[in-house]
Image 1 (tube, rainbow, N blue to C red):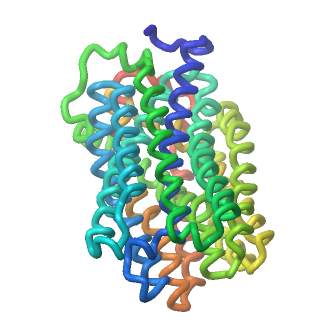
Image 2 (tube, one colour):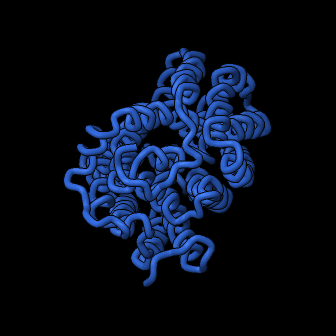
Image 3 (cartoon, rainbow, N blue to C red):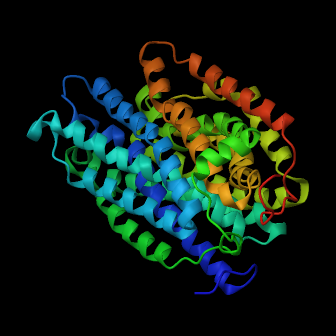
Length: 427
């Protein structure tokens, strides 16, 4: 197949295949957090529902800590062997993890082996997502027309949110159809069966991807690309970390876990929490592309600053607005996600523009995945643990602090909108 050209059908097909694959991959990844409230008691002793949920969320966090290994291995592989190879490998690992959860026996059937299998499945998924962001961000930025990179790469988070949205819609439908009791008994397996099957579709699409012109134009492939990225571009690596700290805590709080938090802590009815989440995420999907296009005109920094400043000022008031009403959840989620859109619309392209082609994926992969593991993966566990010990008011201050760190980085970063992605190393 020929290389994708800006504005040509080949580029559009490559864009569609990448985004559909990313949607299906993030459906699998987010299903764990969304359905954890239903299957937690199946993998741990039933003496305490809170302890079981915390145990399940601890495994959720452990899965994140394998993301840096995925960021190291898959991202490095992607810079050496090609974007297509890395994207195929990531979806294979995700499919295997979802299938393992779908068929795993319960604690009542095999005892301690049940949480071990759940942990193994989450490790496979963690390895997958560790390389997914960097490979997708690099590929999308490289196939996009230079003056529309922000717009094109904004669809990364569109596809990400659609994957989460599909999992949430499926949850709402299953709860409405089966009821909470059957969901806890056996219905929780269905989304993971669906996820494993859909991952086969993603595998087919990604196997047919073509490489970007920027990648194929390289005359040689780097050895140890991650080490080279750290050695030759330390400031860019540090910026990836700074860009990500606040964004990942905000995302996993507002886009993923807040419905479970509202259900468990505030007493919002299950159906109301799920549908409020669906509506808020639809708002995010609609606002991301216009903001990405705006960044092509005014730059990446203004939108990143908008995100960071917004959460520094509003994190605490937003949590104070939460009540037992589904409408309050919708309002809080929508405001939070509109603020997050300033990050989500431009973060992939802003990071891709920091590195030359030879180490672009590796330069993003490990620092991004490590930051997400430390801050994003622990956010659901932290907010639940603090709430159960009567210190829930601490978490929004923590969220504001992480966003303040990112805001400082945004304010001190240089604008990258006009960077040539085919430029050789040494920028």
